[in-house]
Length: 144
Image (cartoon, one colour):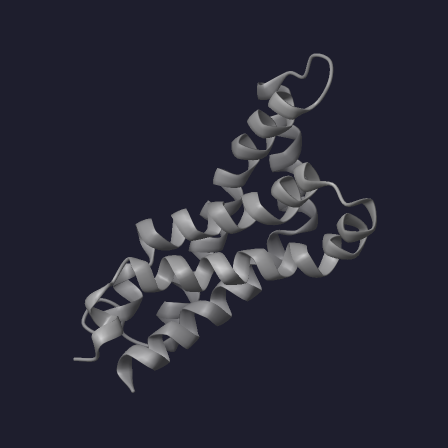
């Protein structure tokens, strides 16, 4: 068994965390760099990475076990599920952080619901696709 497989939660956490930061970084980083706003960097790049890493750590270990994940299709399905859970985790993280850093009053529950709705309507397909690719990649690395 390879050494990296001895950390069945760390590897998916890292892989999904990196993947979870890439998509928002491509979309938002040019604007964030121009404005030099560390809060925007946290909200739009850091929190998606944190949510994806947490979802990967909690649900990604079976991808590395060939007895629990039978093939690349099952790994892709699990990866898409992990990405979906990451979106569910991201919404309250975003709402709490935004309310904490923004001036004025912000309803955390209402903002969470809005972020969930717009995340699933606008971004879920891309997150699920990236999650599926990460799941297949991890499965192929584990079975090679």
